[in-house]
Image 1 (tube, rainbow, N blue to C red):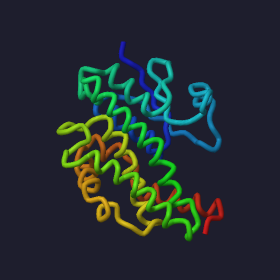
Image 2: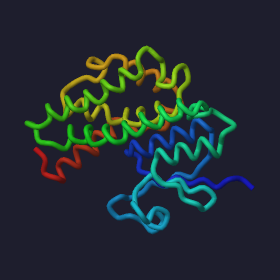
Image 3: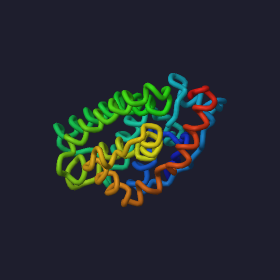
Image 4: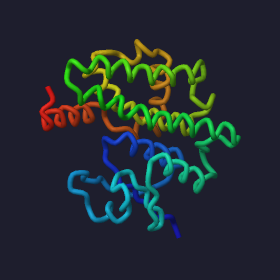
Length: 219
């Protein structure tokens, strides 16, 4: 009997995008169910009663929540193809450390750029660039964060790529100019079909941000 895999997600979610990339890397067929995060449906509430958030991977009726946990689960369950996490315990620990850094820093810093008033954007932009600079230093001269192979930390960070245009537009800066190694790394990742086809279009994300700002009365 084939596995039943369902992904409860939202197209603009960077957290959902990383799960989509992981599934694509493993060539796992799944049913995608777009979620309304304003009027949350009964399936989402039943599958993630604690946080009531996406993404949720439902594997043979059992839910797995939180994107980093889901990516690790995917790697452990479908381990015969395209390993995502390093096999070495120390390297795995490092990958988890930096993934945690991305999640704890990037989302809030990026959100400030497009949800703050004009006079506060400059500080938000510099905070965001500072966080990416730390990651650029970690990347160094490697093609991917894990070395020569695209892996879990690349998935964790490249899921923000669809939002780069929004950050750059509202922040009036270029990530590629300020952080050339990150810019080159992102382009390298986007050459992978598993990445490019899993990410939301940047203009869709930008339109969402514009709509959100209007709704919240942000000038």
